[in-house]
Amino acid sequence: MAYNLLKGKKGIIFGALDEKSIAWKTALRCHEEGAELVLSNAPIALRMGAINQLAEQVNAPVIAADVTVNEDIQALFEKTKEHFNGGVDFILHSIGMSLNVRKGVHYTQNNYDFTHKGFDISALSLHRILAEAMRQDAINEWGSVVALSYIAAQRVFPDYNDMSDNKAILESIARNFGYYYGSQRKVRVNTVSQSPTRTTAGSGVKGFDGFIDYAEKMSPLGNASADQCADYCVTLFSDLTRMVTMQNLFHDGGFSYTGVTQSVIEQMGK
Ligand SMILES: NC(=O)c1ccc[n+]([C@@H]2O[C@H](COP(=O)([O-])OP(=O)(O)OC[C@H]3O[C@@H](n4cnc5c(N)ncnc54)[C@H](O)[C@@H]3O)[C@@H](O)[C@H]2O)c1
Image 1 (cartoon, rainbow, N blue to C red):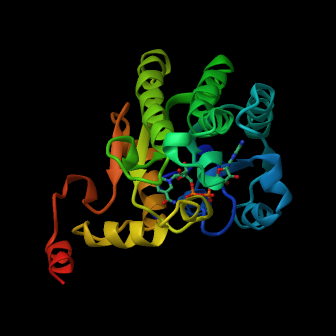
Image 2 (image 1 turned 90 degrees about the horizontal axis):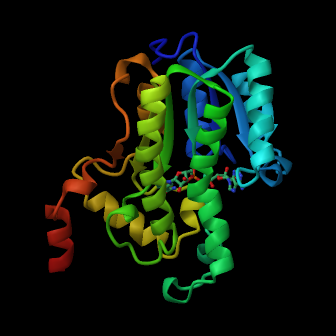
């Protein structure tokens, strides 16, 4: 069901790789709610071609940008402003990658070249995007920026590896930049800490199936799906959440505040 929550709003969605991507689902929901979009992903992801199908569905141009390259981000904002004839009202940062995870390098033996690359892509990119947006005044007053995070920023989840550190810094950047962007331009910046979700990035984590089943049992409402995450992002882009900023918002069916559930107790007793 659509409520026209984003009627007249314009936004950039980073990170739609395929139909499973949280960004893909969010783009569809934002479109349904009346938003006009620009889609962006790394050149290598665009070569896979799937994003063109989404672009057609939501009637949006696709602009390539590797978020570790300042010039790419600069050009993306310039082209977006040209396309919309002005700034945007919201941005979704749905980007993450760890080479240590991908190559199966244990946390205690991390390859620091991999660590730097993963940090640049997964955390520093939010700073780069916000800094360039601010420089070009590319986000309109009362705009909203959301980046996706995971509870491994606060608690240890073995095998989430250096992505835990990346998420902790991502949340910190949202808080700190949120202060400056809020005071200067009334732009809000938040992170959404999402349940484990079966996507390309998610499934790269070792033991992911066990991870997701455990979270399902440990959440009174069960795991939040990618579609439900998209719904939540829509509310955060809408005018109904104007005073929410610098927060890490758990979207996890109650997992983050649950000590143990009956279902886990029964499982342990088997
Ligand atoms: N899947 C989960 O379990 C889960 C849980 C909590 C949070 N998240 C977070 O959600 C976000 C989206 O991930 P997803 O699960 O939809 O997976 P996904 O693999 O579909 O999305 C990750 C995206 O990052 C993009 N990306 C990687 N390197 C890039 C670069 N240099 N420049 C630009 N883009 C680049 C990829 O192309 C891809 O589109 C990530 O931040 C992820 O950590 C995922």
